[in-house]
Image (cartoon, rainbow, N blue to C red; front, side, top):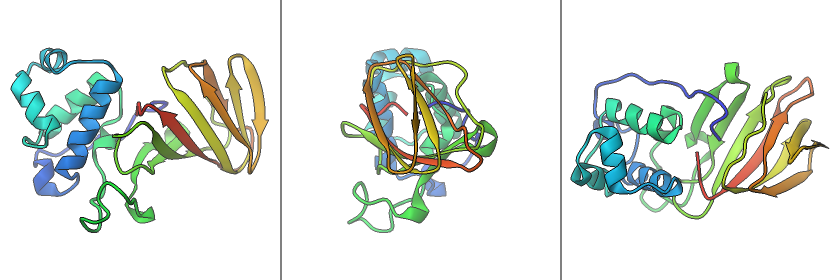
Length: 204
């Protein structure tokens, strides 16, 4: 949800050799991020200083970008580089369909006040689902507006959200939804707040 700086991972080994990211998942994510921002292959190529053919091959899973390339993609799309690192599905039947609890992609840090786990298998499709954990006392300083429809369900803890200038105090079992409106959040409690968050289209 881009409320924090992601963890920066350093390595010069190709992702496919490390096994950190399945080529098809990475390709789908990069394509979804490009389309959600309304960019063409040619525009991406110019911004990255690469050829259109190379970008196309990456999006089709035919070429594996280096760590440096992924840093450039992350900066271009405004997402943490850790988004591109995750655990492989346990088998081919589950790939792109099931995300096991111990194999979620984790984003953010305790220092940022927000840690999120991607519950969706990838960023393809019309929405993304996240498990967001808000630290006690954490909050957004200023409202943000995104070209998305969003909804959430409070699993535990207390959670305040300001939507279009109005604050709403929510507790366990409460839910919310808004569409293309400015919002910000805060956790006024002394325990973490856990919220299942849905965003359409995917923007992470």
